[in-house]
Image (tube, rainbow, N blue to C red; front, side):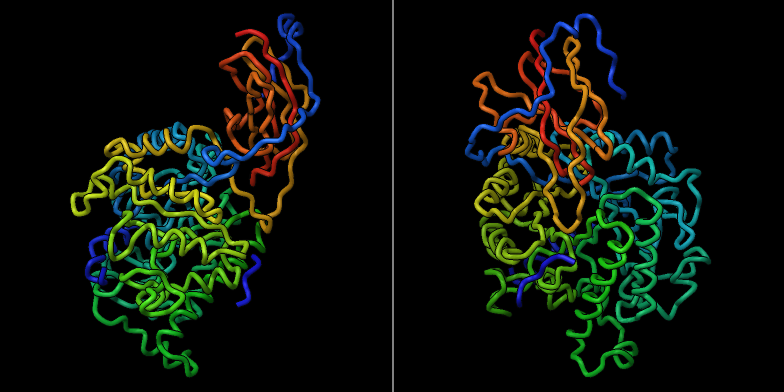
Length: 520
């Protein structure tokens, strides 16, 4: 439980809203040459440094990898396991090359599984047929390859979507929507689980708990989908559940309570199992408009609170999420939902709480002709520059991986050049615990290769290069951080003094050890 606090016109945003809805080695022995190098394991003194905002020490940098409709991965159904692996690794390499440190991978698009499950059927987005075994369990590979590259792995679930086809008869016989038709509501051309039913909440918690128990995930993630977006299918028919469970509340208030209850139950279940696993949500970017609520944002678009019953402020105040990641998919100056208005509003929403704020960035919008701002290569980079004004903003996540590869207008390279010139450690969440491992032992240089003995409990190691001036800013920011590596070795590209620290899975950091490389 985190510490909470005491307590366009909608039509203008329809196009953006619809699109957003898819969101959806051991050390080597020392050689004679190495023994001549000057090495020491004494902790380096930390000189007084003024933090440089260009090089934050800790910052989340992530990308969403959507599997629904094969948006990002796999690129199409029916690929061989080897082809699926190759495509995934290509995405990860692109992320790592730009100094990202997290991936949010959709493992449950619609009451299906991109992993071996006894609770829900195999996803159709792997083989082309729901329930068909792909012949391997992708999830261990997906997690392991991410960790090899210093990327946190967040398992992304959609809680209430049951099927992309309103014809439930097409689903596998063991699908929960066929086993429990009374749990479902048809809405437009899709089927949803009814959020008002305790049995549905119990099922969702069971699915997520199963993944947390069996797989080494770093986080659990929900996107913006709760109750369906308006206009997709008329009225959402949950009258019977409301009559049974409403207990005198308004329909809207009851629906918000249903979502809030699920969020709290998922939070509790995750952290009862594994304290270190993070839980967060990426809500639609407008909580409420100021015209609806004096505490809302200066916007004029769809309200998540009123339209899909997602009350992000309630989650923040209750401390039932570790982070919020609002999808701020609009440009600076967009009249109905100006990025310049929304970023500070969300910064204020988490202020004085322990809930982290990351911003969902619309990489998929770059190059769009319906908004002149998105035709400019620097628009997205400018968002991150603006974010620096608000200390509550702890990072950014990009939708989605397809555009990470295609790099429209060179915008992602621009972001990397302007903001990700150095790696960054993950932001620390005190309630997720952890502790710094022992500092690396036996550090030495052999030619250009630095090696050390692996520290117990270390997930990774940070390598800093002290500048020729000798001014050591390792404890202040990332200006001297040259790499975060998964194993106990690093190849130096320049002579000089290096500092190495051990990091646990949450990036609690040890004191540094010092190694000198005299020649390259």
